[in-house]
Image 1 (cartoon, rainbow, N blue to C red):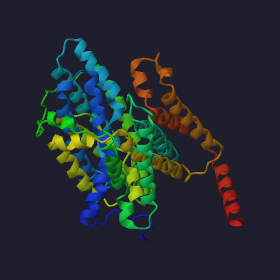
Image 2: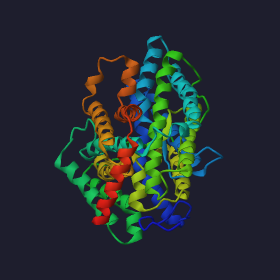
Image 3: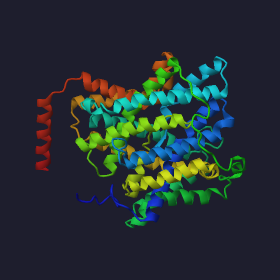
Image 4: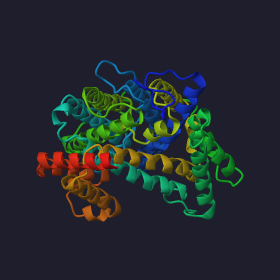
Length: 459
């Protein structure tokens, strides 16, 4: 296989220790906020403040274990890529609704946690089951549908990145000149370093940009470590620490989200494969997708046992592969070790939590936008004819419409609202439905492809 000039280290290369550690730390920086935020939101919303430090530690540890499983590949389990695992945002509404129901019945905090982890564990078997049949529905999991999902993921993440750059959601100084200057400075540093011909500067661009941003933020009073004294010295994983509970009424919405999560994972792994210089069609590709979705399910089973919420393959770190040029799966072993250590010693994770939002926003904005480019590239592998243009435009319209105007779903039944509230889910479902419904004119597609070839030849 010929080497891709954009990739410094390919899938099975073994970068030197320092390069591996540097690349791994950048993946952690790109994913850290995404891993801990769902736990923070769920814990704060349900009044579980006392449990949050421990739950965050478990989220980080299980993310590390899951990342290792994905990269290592145990038989059919795993995709063999740098596929960082993390706590999924998609399940938050269903879990919060279910836990609130337990509370209304008179349940304690431990009862709420036991129920959430119980349905996390049992629902994961839905994804395990689906993984064995993904290749049977490959006529709807096409480059077009996965490209739409990836593009929608990116566009929703860009909103998060820009919000952080301006100061973060709910910040009193949101949009202040100091926040914008700090975030843009980090963005410019990463762009300049990534454009360099020096391989080391490119590999370290995200790390250097965030570190420089932290140095700028400290004298401005935007970086504080006062909260570290409140964190425990060590967190020990205890299986079923809060017990185990199950309820069909709470389980069904979570099970539906697991079904949708499999589609999102297929999109993330497609982008990951593209950035890693691997095929996004054929048997090898299908094998990776099946193994990745199966690992998602297995990792969520582990998550339920060890007191954290459903795990999924993250899209945030895919752009790190593109920007650093490091696609070696051995880097994932370093990522896994870092995440486990951060979970075991909460103070270390607390240092990363102290990083100012504008610094993280400046770094993640360009990474999330890079994922959008991957989605466009994948979609463009199919002819953009009238039928496909209709599928793309309608899917993006529905997906982004629910993101920009979430109130449109306010009057729907809660179970349907849970499903459609995710822009990725709405866009993905619409793309699949239209792919099945709209007729495919093979002769016309062939004619359009031949015409395109002639135009290319004449050019």
